[in-house]
Amino acid sequence: MLLNIYSYYSEETRIIAPAARTKVGTAAPKIFGKELRDLDDADLEGLLSKLSPEELEDLNSDFDPDNSLLPPSQRCRNQTSKQPTGPYQRDKLLVFLEESAKQEEDWEEWVPFSPGIKRGKIYEPKESSDKKSGKMEMPIELDLDDDEDDLDEALHDAPEKDLVDLAGILGMHNLLNQSQYYSALKGKGQDETTGTTFSGVVRAFEAKILPEEPENETDVDECIKKLEANDEMVTEININNMKRISKERIKALIKASCASKHIKKLSMANTAISDQEARGLVELLETSPSLRVLNVESNFITPELLAKLLRATLVTQNLTEFHAENQRASVLGNQIEMDMMLTVEENESLLRVGVSFQSMEARHRVSEALERNYERLRLRRLGKEPQE
Picture 1 (cartoon, rainbow, N blue to C red):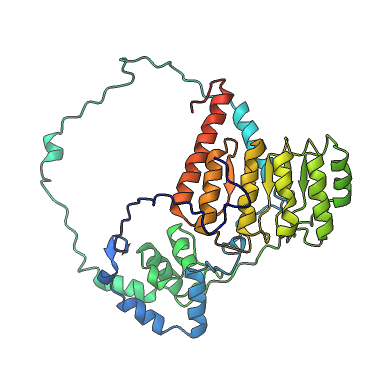
Picture 2 (picture 1 turned 135 degrees about the horizontal axis):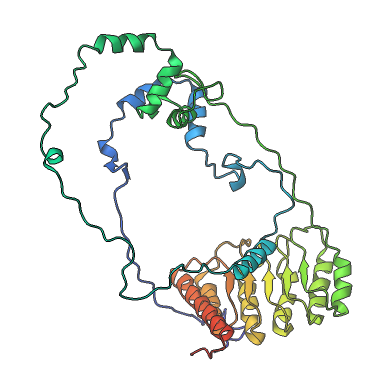
């Protein structure tokens, strides 16, 4: 049942959905199968007390490099060795992977499967001989007491570099830094980069400077002219990250998109548009027969208008992807979420909805609605009639 766009946010109207029932389990935190209270921190506290403030800061950065204030691309060590061939384009990568998967032939079976036929050699346990099962007539005994003096002398005369390797092999990682420990496990010698002493500090690797992504050079005026002329070649408009465009030109672009019958994708992410400019998208969603993807992420659109935009997709039911995350209002509110949830359930064409729901019920029911739409699409592709 469709709701009136201008009346379903009144105080008298309330949409109540049943609460989600989930099972929550809790478990005591453990490290290597032991509880925290069973661990002995005497050695660790003794080592930390000997470190200087600079060394403690370096140690903290080595063991906890994930800084939430840094972007994800700068939290890990750079592991690439080749220069980028061009800017990252996710859509082209997905198309390439899909085409490669379709063209790749299935693996043929060497021998066709036949039920009831056993292949290969049947396992038969070997009989254990008395010599192997019984005890040894002359057991081997090792006496290390005689070699204790030689062992102490060898350890006393060994250089500290060899002792570092020995500590890594014995698993005494609390005495080594991370690079020394892994070099010892791999059988590599210690060098200046890892440190040859127990007080060695890991040197920072040189950051790889990558070229910045080029700015969006879309000619908005040219796009407006082609859209108004209903050009068949213009099927995608991308003005992402173009914050310097005037509000009048954005309104003109949206109005011109309403006149085009061939546009399939409109991306307006991070363009600082508000409700005043985004209201024209309601008419676009209600009238455009070809629009499939709409992206208005990272803008200043209110939750009420987002719900109206999603409700407008019910008129034509052609839109398959709706992305509207990261708006100024991070919380939509229960009333808005329930309305958007009902809209997605009524829409049979939506496959992706980029909206952050706080309510567990809304997330669950939206996910189920999108799964039903995927199933309808699969049945139509196979030539079957979807069951309602």
